[in-house]
Length: 233
Image (cartoon, rainbow, N blue to C red; front, side):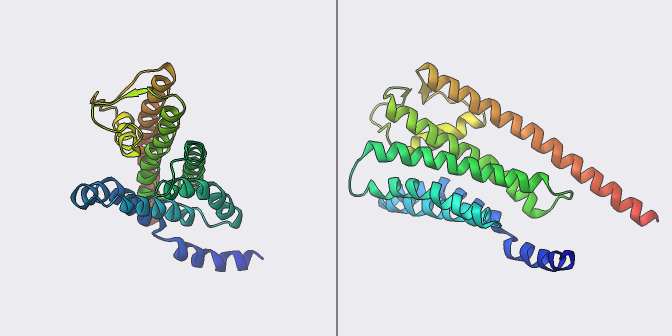
C-alpha cells in the first residue's frame, strides 16, 4: 500500500503542477485585459467569460480530492448563474445568493490553497505562485461581500457621480485598494457595516503579507541550511 502511494504521488504532482499559474493569469486578465477591451469595444460579456474562467480554474486548483470538486461545483454554480442571468433579467435575490456563494467558494479555495502551501517544506515556483493567488483571491472574496452589502443596504458606499454603484467592477477596484491600504478615497464606506468590513479586509491583507513573507523566508532559510548540511557530509 505504501509503495502504491509513493508511485502515485509523482504522477499526481505532475498532473497538478502549474495549476495555480493558470488561475493567476485569469485573475490578472480580469483586472487588466477585461476592462481594457470593455472600454474599447464595450464587450461586457468578456468580463463574464473571465469570471467563469477564474471559477473553473479555482475548482481545478483544489481538485486533488473528489469531494473538494463537488463542494467547489456546488458553490460555484449559483455564482455563475448570477453572472450570466444578468444578460436576461435583473433578479436581486439571485444576485445576492450568487455573490454569497461566490464569497464562500473563494474562501473554500483560499483555505485549501493555504493547506497546500503550509504542508510543504521547500519553496517552489508553485508555492510562490499559490501564495500570490491567495492574496488576489482575498480581494475577490471581499468584492462579493461588498456587493452583497450594497445590494441589501443601498447607499452603504459612495462613488463619484455618474457611475453605477451596482457595477461589480467598482467593488473589485475598491477591494484591491482597501486590501493594499492605498485608500484613494474616491469610493468610501458610509454605514458602520461597510466600514467594519473595510477595516477587516485591510487588517487581513496586512497580516497575510507579514505572516506569509515570514513563513516563506523561514522555509527558504531552513531549506538552504539543510542543503549545506548535506553537502558538508
